Length: 201
Image (tube, rainbow, N blue to C red; front, side, top):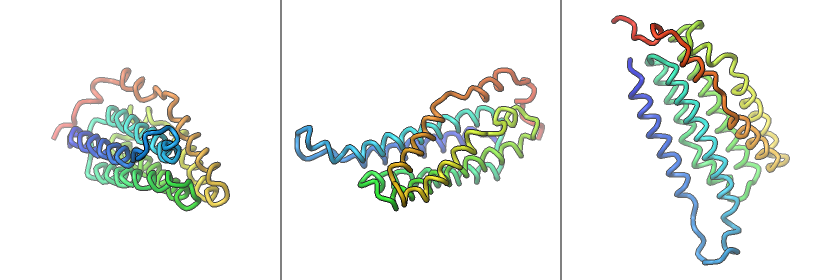
């Protein structure tokens, strides 16, 4: 099965997610700098979520670059990831209102499950391409992915103790992923051209 349709659909969904998030940024009614103060928490939530969605889009793009084909299992794993990402605008808007414990915890739950969904997507692709494929080599142990899930899991209960510290952990995860990881690009550049050919039908 060709991967182009999966990529196009995923790109469209992610673009809609970003659009919905920015539409939640309501301009103040008063034309003063003071009127912007209540908007600051919502804006900070938007920036954090925009970074996370951008990270997922970048990683998803590189993952599909390394993949040669997709199966029904991969399609459902991809839809599972998009489901959790589609909830990002909701928890972003909720958390941005006050940074209260329950919304901050809910934000962490969505991010945790999105991280787990991305891990399942990579496993589904590796299962299709084989443990010795260039895709499996480029993904490797995925230590950053595992660390992200651990930090999300720690932030959820912490949100009920100190929400701002939990938000700090979310920022740590975002910064961690902003550091470029060239494994997939390097592997694609050096892989055997014969490996990328479609298998005979």
